[in-house]
Length: 462
Ligand code: GLY
Ligand code: MN
Ligand code: MN
Image 1 (cartoon, rainbow, N blue to C red):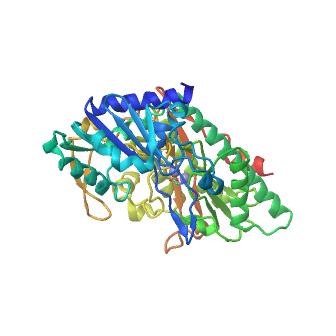
Image 2: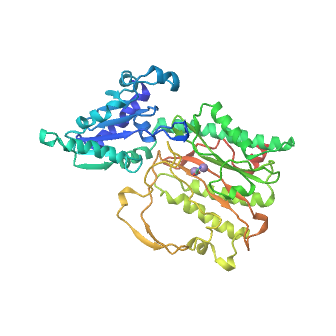
Image 3: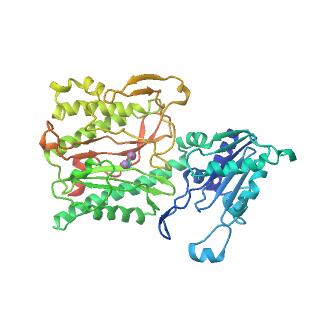
């Protein structure tokens, strides 16, 4: 078996141990999605499916039984369809190519499932992820139940396959970390290229639109073998940066404004997720620099708080502490109205300018799977009233970070014009986002091939 197949086989073996000798796991890949009329969106495999198989074709199902056997159902060879749509591995070649035990045509799925399910105690499948999956499985189970008088045995438990796979995917092995480092290096190169092009175009007197910068990102992603962006790139000029989910559109990039770019490529199934905010012309103005350095200081505090043994919420809390103090210092918040830093945190007075969390898991999915609460402390629930909404919040202990977890660290400040908000900061939106692998003693930032300090950004764009 080749090295990649060994990796997938090890993951399937770990899953088989988890579901027990009599369990069975059933997992389809992602459905193809129609874009309009007879055009589909570009196909992207299901992440769980890929994690266990490395197989990227559409229309495929994996069945893994607790005895460690793996069966694939996939598209059969079909010369005519392959002439139109491309190569198919096909069931005859699949066992050897993928290192699995058996493969059949997808057309055989319904006919073969009862025998695969017969005598199993629990059937595991991903809950609430694939539309109509439950009814498909119900159909197989009811078919099996109809035959119990002939000696067949129907599983009596249904379990969520995500709960097992999420925990496995949360810790990235060395292969995954390596792919993610490479994805980040490509994305960092794309940010560098785009910053430089932006300043150069403005200097040459050319009109710069957000889509010009989006095109630079895409060029660099594809030049280096990335299959596609890991998510819709955000390229936001000026005030557009205050729209958190803004997309690269047609906005004019003006001399003197900041540009916020949140973009990362996907490489071999793994996402990167980087944000940089830079002056379009290559030089920060005074107010821009003031807020930028505040966000950067808050990110540094978050980075220092990211290490094995810390809680997932520690980087966020560290960020908020720095931002809250900074907002008071620069006059975004008036201490006569909101009090000191502890009051700002307690009452969440910073929220109008910083309304998102400081990070998320990163992996195959940009907002990757994995529980954010600590599984070993799940029963420890405390209740409190939210300071802003008055809603009752149930707090559970946050996840304890462990080596191999990968997360983003992405503080920001977004200033919409409002009464009492100093005008010099109006319409400035800043986010700085890096990707970190948790280590024993701290974290490894894997996205820093693109600079982050004011001096380095200005030097790069000069
Ligand atoms: N790009 C999505 C995020 O930063 O979470
Ligand atoms: Mn991002
Ligand atoms: Mn992110």
